[in-house]
Image (cartoon, rainbow, N blue to C red; front, side):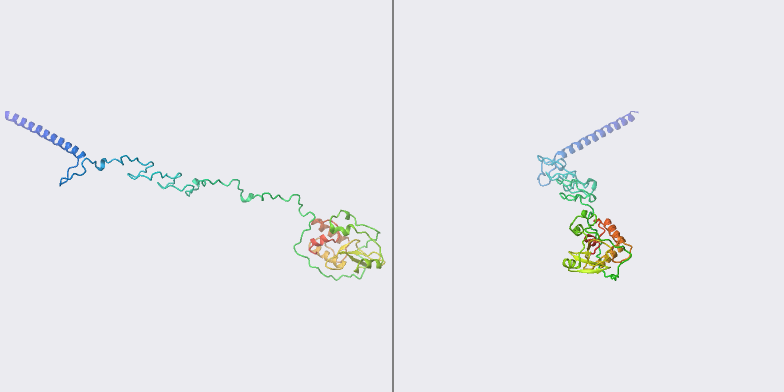
Length: 314
């Protein structure tokens, strides 16, 4: 029994001694590690390796040198001093966009720095009239202006029975000093011959002294004067005239050929549906008046210069 107790006590003491040894070894290891933390063991040859110089683990970041403002996240790598990160920086990290240069996305497109947007610029559909150039006020559309047909009328020669006296158109009766009705209202020098006209009865000598060209047409005599043909009342007895008034001379043609060319031009434009007979009767005069009304001309119902110009004849 005693022997058993002695063995147990010996084992207990041995365990305690072993535990103490392990504890002492652990303390020595901790002390050794603490010494290595602040000191580097000397290299062979006796040359110390920077005694007291801290290792990289404890190296301060640039003692006395302030960290640069705006330093990027890159460890140990500062950004360039005083270089601002671009305002309006695009999604590319660290790369500033050029000031005023759009990033390509229209919704973030900035206006050009210092350049104002063009204010009040009208769209093409609302293009303003040139400044300072007023619109033409009071200008009538074609008032008194002959409308051009675009194609000049080529004069023609017609085969007309001018040696005979017409029977289908009643002749007019001579009235001394008769004026053309309404001619006092026809304004402009192109109507002077009509305003000044009055019927006169003279013999052949008088007519020849006042005109260098007297022709016989359809039973009547016509005298040429200042660009117009006039009925030569009194030149011969029983003369026939379908119209008492001036007829504008056209292309050096006698009065019957002038009338026939006017009838043809009016036919081509749908104003005259009668026969081309060279007589300035009521139907022809009505067609002339209709053309004049439709084309903004003075309604004379006569063969005048403005009407022939509008027809492309003069």
